[in-house]
Length: 168
Image (tube, rainbow, N blue to C red; front, side, top):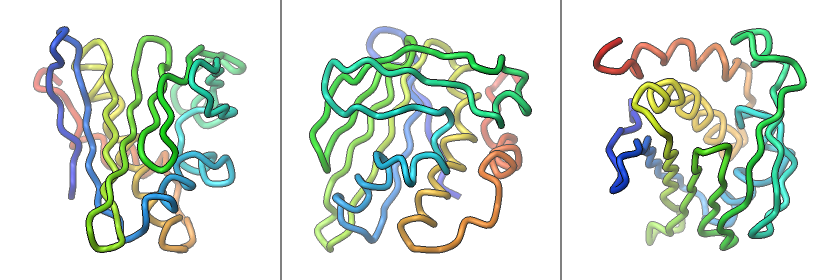
């Protein structure tokens, strides 16, 4: 199992980092991580992408977040698009968190996808770990053309024990 890693940033924040190899071109992976047709199946909030640097974003709770975590229905968090280099880099601000996706060709026609989620505390990072991990499993299935016959949310619950902080 390829778990995410946690480290400190230069300014004392916490970075949760995932690296995944995909046997697909960066452009194809880019499409899955940015196209709403795919995004709705794995991204942890409802958001309408405007991939223009400086664009304002609204992250809305999903029905699953309301049901599973008791988040208020209709709650929105604000964010913005920081960096866009199609097929290479996407960086977003979500409240005070920064989500940075980077795609790099692997030399054999596939690519490496790295997601770094920078947040304020280790507890926050560990709380996000299982969800991103499960989301990447959905992305992999989408890229491979396999049906997604499982719940990303239930898979995240299964993975949660692997993403508990040292004090948990």
